[in-house]
Structure formats: C-alpha cells, structure tokens
Amino acid sequence: MSLQVRAAIRATVATGVGALLLLIPGLNAILFVALMLPLWVLSNMGVSGLGSPLNGFFIPSAIGWTLVALVVWLMAYLLFRGTQLKD
Image 1 (tube, rainbow, N blue to C red):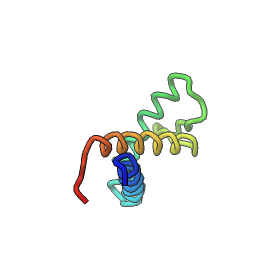
Image 2: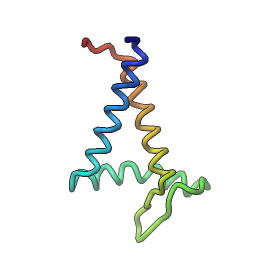
Image 3: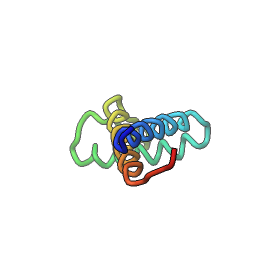
C-alpha cells in the first residue's frame, strides 16, 4: 500500500476519532470552542453560510461543520504523510 493511501486512511480514522470525542461531555465543550472560533472569525470577515451567532456563541451550520472536517482531515493527512509508521 502506498504512503499516500496509508496517510489518507489514517487521516480518515483521526477525523472520525475527533468526531467521536465531540460526543464526550466536558471534552466536547473544549473541542467545540476550538472549532467554533475560526469559523466565527471567517464569518465576521464576510464568508456567509458557515453558521450564525447565538447568545455569545457561534453555532456552525452543516457547511461550517463540513469545512471543519475538511480542514481537520487535511491537517491529519499532511501530518501522517510526513511520518512513516511501521505496520
């Protein structure tokens, strides 16, 4: 299996694990804020459709969550592409 395919599989697993961690009470609040703040900044810069502010929080829309997942997957892919873990 090529290095790029292994990196893609590992990035997919890492993104899935991150999504599961969002289900754990307490930890999900920290992760939610970490994912919410960049979307809020982008929304304030004029990118529409990422979500809406509500009572001091930014609630991501489906497009916002998709963008977050894409960025997390891409970061994990680039991280795993540079490493060669022995299987």
